[in-house]
Image (cartoon, rainbow over all chains, first blue to last red; front, side, top):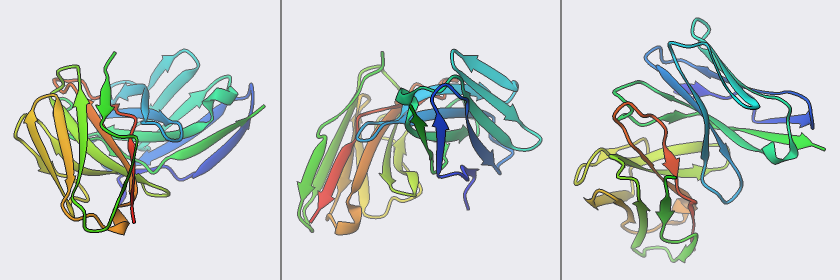
Length: 114
Length: 113
């Protein structure tokens, strides 16, 4: 049973517009959420995270929103750039001070069209 | 910056061979992980380790074993490689101690023929 779901396998956005990537989770014990970005033939790189005590975290063009009641988080990229084209993975942790493995979604492939 | 290195970027092995994938991290991280990534399946956890000589099974441990003799090094072993183990293998490490971020190596593309 998938605990972290990214229901959109792919997304295409025009350069300069907003990209919104969505993620849903089922485990109410998750208390920390992360987004990773992955280019082909490279390892994933950490992008941004949010603790369950917050509902928003912003870092430059990237903002993550958390809606705990809906068990939903989203990553907003504004403005989108061609270099943002990659696969984005949502991940969640059920605490224990980071000593438990992250649970990853299956990823969403973002294509930013110039 | 955290650096996680993997011994090979590309590897081709024959069915039945014993395969060793090595991973080294340079930031004194407590935790290390091995994943495989396959199209449409995302990242699946094979094994992880909280500490030297400690190991825990992940979601898909069958056909794999691991070794962590030193804190900075975590090895993945395919005892008898099979074609269904053709995949991208990713190693990661994390500090733990309240820090959740995992840092990944560049990956090893393994092909078993």
